[in-house]
Amino acid sequence: MNTKKIKINGSFLNSNRALLFLIVVLIAGIFQNNFYTAFNINAVTGNGSLFIWLGLGFTICLIAGHMDLTVQYVSTLAALMCLGLHADQKIPWVLAIIIATLVGALVGLINGILVAKLKIHSFIATLGMQFVLRGVMYFYSGGAEMSIGSDYSANEVLTGQLIPVLPFSTYFLITTLVIILVMVFMRNTRTGRNIYLVGGNLETAWLAGVKSDKVTIAVFMLSSTCCALGGALNGIYSGAANVTMGEKGIAPLMIALTATIIGGTAISGGAGSVVNTYITLVAVAFLKAIFVKTEEQVLVLALILIACIAYETIAQYRKDKVLGTRPNLHLEYLKEKGKI
Image 1 (cartoon, rainbow, N blue to C red):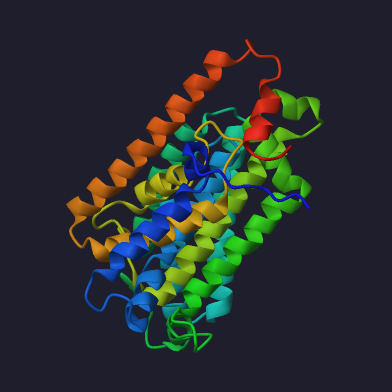
Image 2: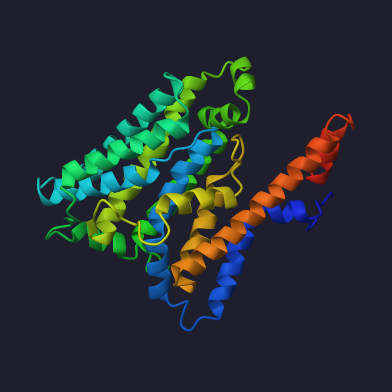
C-alpha cells in the first residue's frame, strides 16, 4: 500500500498559508485573558461575517481574472434597502431580503455587461460603479442611518445560536453554509471550472469552446448577489446601517482584497479558493479582536501580505528562469506535488 509522504517545505507552507495564519492567530488568543469564551467567539465570528461575504465575492471575480471593487458598496446598499423596506414600507423580512439581493444581482449584471460586452477593464468599470452606488445610497437614505425598527424577530434569529452546543451565531453558520455551497459549485460544476479556465488563460478557454462573455457576466452577478445577501443579513444582524457602514478602521474592501491574496488567489486569475479566503477572514476577525488598535491591525496584515507576495514573486521568477531549459519540468513539478 502506497502512502504519500508530506514534505514540509516552502511550497507546502505556502499552499497552506491560510490555515497556518489561522493557527498562529488562534494560538496568540490563548495568551489573552478570557479570550475564548462562548460570548466572545460568537461576537467575533458574527461581526466578521460581513467581511467573509465580501471576500467571497471578490475571490470569485479574481479567480476569473477580474476585480470587483463594488463588493462593499453593494452590501451596504442591500443593508439599507432591506432595513428601509421592512421598517418604512412594512414589507416582510424574507421579501425584503429577496428584493435587496435581486438589486445586488442587477448591479452585478450591469458590471458584467460593462466588462464583457463593452470591453471596459473591470477595475475601471467597478470603480465607476462605486460612485454610482454611493450616490444611490445617499439618495435612498438621505445620508441618515436606517434602523431595524420595532420588529426584532429576524435580529433575534440571526444573533441567536442555531445549534446550542456551538458558540456561533446563526448569521455565521449561514455564511459558512454559503461558502461550502460556492466551493462545491466552483469545483464540481462545468460553469465553476470554466471560471478557472477563463481566468487562467482566455485564449485556451476560447479554443475549448467556453463562452467567456457569459462566464464573465455570471461571475459578476454571483459576486454581487452574494455580497448583497450578506449585506442584507448583516443589516438585520447589526440592527442598523448607514452609508459608511464598516468603514471605521480598515475599509472592508481592503480587508477583502488583502484576505483574498493572503488566501492564495492569484492576482492574474485562474487559481484560488473561496475556502482559503474564508479561513483567512476568520483569522482576520480574531486578529482584530486580539489587536484592538487599528494601527496594529494594519501593520500585522501588511507584513503578512508583503511576505506572501514576496514569496510568490520569487517562486515565479525561479520557475520562469528554468522554463524551457528542462523539457520534463512539468513532470518534476507533479512529483514535487506528490501527484505522480
